[in-house]
Amino acid sequence: MAVHFDLEPYKTPLLFLAVAGVVVPLFRRLRVSPVLGFLIAGMAIGPHGLGRLEKITALGLPFLGADDNIGPVAEFGVVFLLFNIGLELSLERLRLLRRFVFGLGALQMLVCSAALFGVARAFGLPPPASLELGAALALSSTAITVPVLAERRRLNTMSGRAVFSVLLFQDLMVAPILFATTQFGAAPEAGQSLFWTFGPAVLGVALIVVIGRLALRPLFHLVAAARSPELFMAACLLVVTGAAVTAAMAGLSMALGAFIAGLLLAETEYRRAVELAIDPFKGLLLGLFFVSVGAGLDPLQVVAHPGPTLGIAFGLIAIKTPLIAALALLFGPSRRQSGEIGLMLGPGGEFAFIVLAAAQSAKILSAELAGQALVGVTLSMALIPLFALAVRGGRPSRGKIPAGPEPDELAPASRVIVVGYGRVGQMVCALMRTHEVDYLCIDGDPGIAAQARGRGEPVYWGDATRRDFLESCGLAQARAVVVTMHTPSAVDAVVRQVRESHADLTIVARARDAAHARALYKLGATDAVPETMEASLQLSEAALVDIGVPMGLVIASIHEQRDLYRKELLADESVSAPPRPFVGRRWKKKPAKG
Image 1: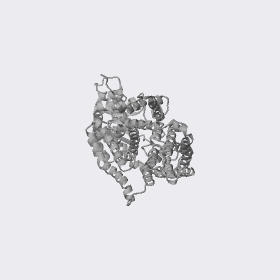
Image 2: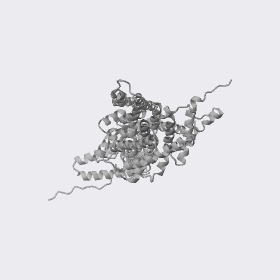
Image 3: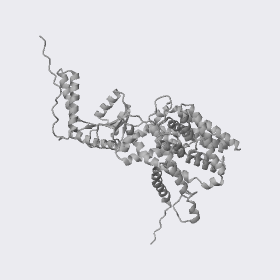
Image 4: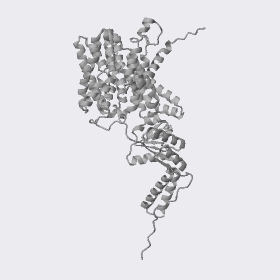
């Protein structure tokens, strides 16, 4: 008996997973950004590429058809990207970037929109259509530019911070642009006021902020106490999607709602663990977004109307790039850095699709003009990875740094990572503060982490035995790792993970006894400090000082005994044998005079 299987529900996921499994390894091997690969693959399997075969042959081939709307799912790629950016920023760090966000970002939107409005008017478009087209084309691509800069390690540079700040301001401007679109498209209802127009948006933002302030930390504390990775991941997805949908219902962009939720979570002790949990979803959904952008590109439309489509794509870059570069010079970057900023922000962005679709629905733009603009924007976005390759140099630039301390979310600090915030870890952190050494602490107990964050300590909750979590805490930039956990197996796991990934990093670990210290040295610890040894040294120090031996002499002998004991542990001898007796200098009491 033949069984009928309906491939249709599984076609799009299978296509995307096949593209991700082939495109990413292939383009990484070719040292080309996977973003460009996703765009090309989307164009190939889309309704305007190989999908045309379905219309001709009707063979049921698994290609994207014109009615396969993956846009709503693909939009979550941008949502997760903005949520992750919010996690990296925090409200305090956003304040540090305010010069670029509200200075350069506002000027860029104003000047570029005005210039593009003038060009549209010169081609005979009416003022509303020119305004919409100018505002839509002034936007740049967050979804492509930020991952490309991060992949090439340019996000930590001054130009990278400026690009990111401008993109952030543009994301904040999407809601006002969409509001203006609805106002141009239809006359406001009788008695409608600005309060009722902007009220839902303001209420939506307030709702996200209030619920986030009151509920996020208790929610994650409850989930973290359950010690279930699945529940923690479910809570992360709930927060992202809940904030995004709330913002969308209020008339804002979903990405803006997710960004606000990320900002709120950035101030909590769960920031690093949340960032790690949502990272795979962000990467996969962003890939799906790029595939959807490529699928919307119709090569035949470029051939049929080469003037308008190519003119929009390259004219957009030709107008925006020099304008943005000139504006960037006013904020401190060098000429080369300003050129990089202009080049990365010159192409169009994904939010232009939303604005142009809204303008077409409101009868402000004709379907033909909106379609040509969409193709032009897509072509310009496809050039961003190539522009990133053309940027000279891969090292962080040394331009003039903006006023205020450098924001550490884009320039990771070289700090000491302390694993474990118990009694030993707290003493280590106190001495780090005394000597003004920057540090970050990790603890697996949500209660301890919450109390420490309440006192302003840089403590994060998470599983330090996971190498990816340690990397997310800045292991690559760390000056040293101090492991103070009381469980020997956990100490062993952390030392092993750190040493396998970073051969030259200083690792100081707490050991239970001499046998444990010997094992830690074999795992690669730079120093292993047995609790029993340190207790005996402290007892000896107290006794010698109390009976009148000078403090300096006691400290010298303690250090000598500690060095001798360390050599004993590193020697190829039985660990169970007691350490050799201390043979330091003997201090004789001088005979009394007379």
